[in-house]
Figure 1 (tube, protein in one colour):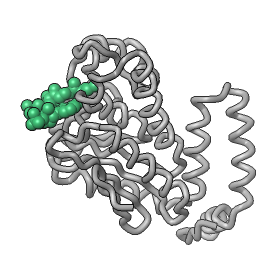
Figure 2 (cartoon, helix red, strand yellow; figure 1 turned 30 degrees about the horizontal axis):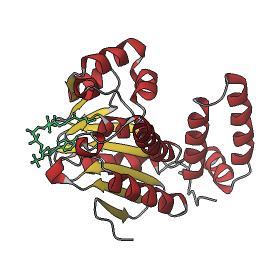
Figure 3 (cartoon, helix red, strand yellow; figure 1 turned 45 degrees about the horizontal axis):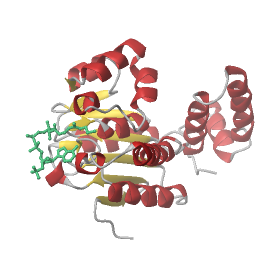
Amino acid sequence: MPYDTIIFEINKEIAIIKLNRPEKLNALNKKMLDELDDCIKNIETNNAIYGLIITGSGNKAFAAGADISELHECNKQTGKLFSEYGSYVFKRIEQLTIPVVAAINGYALGGGCELALACHIRFASDNAKLGQPEVSLGVMPGYGASQRLPRIVGKAKAIELIISGAMIDANEAYRIGLVNNIFSQEELLAKTFEFLNTCFKNSKLAIKSSIDCINKSFEMSLLEGLHYESQQFGEICNTKDFKEGTLAYLEKRLPDFQNE
Ligand code: COA
């Protein structure tokens, strides 16, 4: 399906979603969430996709937040639905078991920062600016920052960022662990592809199971999570990749993984 507000491409094994409203700094409106939802459904059912990169069109923004003109119309009932819908779409992104990397190429504010938080890994360009400015608009984060930001940067830093509404630059985001790495704007996408392709020298089945278990670790008790990990470990021991990887080590050669 052709999209109006996002660009969806597949480059060999890696899908890329570009948020595409550059004239509005890629602000997330309802249509963009609908299209993201549809796109994620496609990715969930495409077994040939092993990684996903989310980035913004243009060189100014990843996404400058939820679309404030739509947000302004919310009341008690529709505000709840507004928040639930964005959270639902972002949760589906987070629950993917292929690695999902946010390539933050400029402003990632409000809902834009929250979309990046739902990704598994965040790389930033050196001109990136991140923040949760909702309180300056008389509102609060509604697409997950109150829950994910403390898990990523700790409670005190999350409260500081959310109640100040402050924008931080890429260096500060890196210092507090909000982004995993910083690259120049020109290199950001190439370095993101390079990272994923380096990971893909490993068993992609083992990568998927690892991400699945790590995702579950945020939803289960430690005991349940350890039980789930052991189950998945057993499944992985039943794959050809496992036999090949361990045999290659014993035979002192590189493995030839077939994703089986
Ligand atoms: N929702 C709707 N439109 C937005 C937007 C948002 N979150 N963020 C930017 N835009 C629009 C602007 O209204 C402007 O549209 P216009 O040209 O039709 O007036 C366009 O994108 C360009 O933005 P502009 O403000 O002119 O760019 P800038 O470089 O001067 O400032 C920002 C950049 C990011 C500092 C500024 O756009 C901003 O503060 N945006 C809102 C950020 C925010 O509060 N996000 C959280 C929302 S919950």
